[in-house]
Image (cartoon, rainbow, N blue to C red; front, side, top):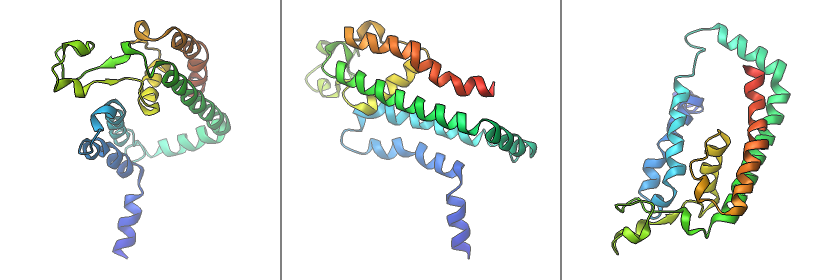
Length: 182
């Protein structure tokens, strides 16, 4: 009986978010975890879900959540699906166009992180392309979907068209849920 109670507690959203936020620590022990550190580091944001558990502080929030879900549930689900599809599609295009772009190289262990020529022979092994994999491209695409374009001057010309698409279409699709709730 106690085991069933523990299994039920492990399925809680806050516990799962806490477990996923610890994933970067375990992934850092892997061989090439340094290459995917931006992706793994962004998982730490899941820890903030514990702070958003308002149902224990204000019981009326549970009813508010039910009303919002009943009224906007299908629109939120549809816009979430479309937003996820656009996110994955644009990240795949970023990966395709910039995987061999030398301006997207970053060297975290070197003095000048954007210049691989400033690295010693040992430090040059830490260099990698920001768009070398689709998970890395997903991270930078999400930054662009939030309206920030920090690497705009480093993108290839084809990838800049993807940035324009993200600015015009992607932000509109991701703005629909915010407009419904806000």
